[in-house]
Image (spheres, rainbow, N blue to C red):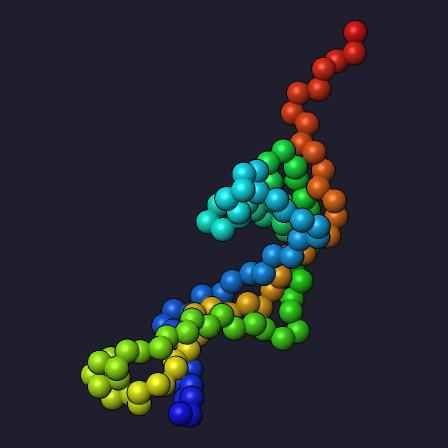
Length: 121
């Protein structure tokens, strides 16, 4: 059977930003990173993105991508959906949900955040 694809654009298309980190990020526990908070992303007045992860701070830069990425969500309707909507059975639909035009690159090593420095006596 021949696969038929249909791509449609979602209403209120979101714009996402891709984050690129150098090195590895490991979860504290063996649960993995999915669904967990990675850190806090801030944009100070200078326009340099700052990522705070635990007790470390990273400074990044915003890069415009030459070619944009498209975020697609695959939707394969059931037979009853095809009959109701008038689509062919086996039609795979892709819904465009977001565009990615920029990325934030964190290419430097993280610096530790020191909050309490004891004074020398």
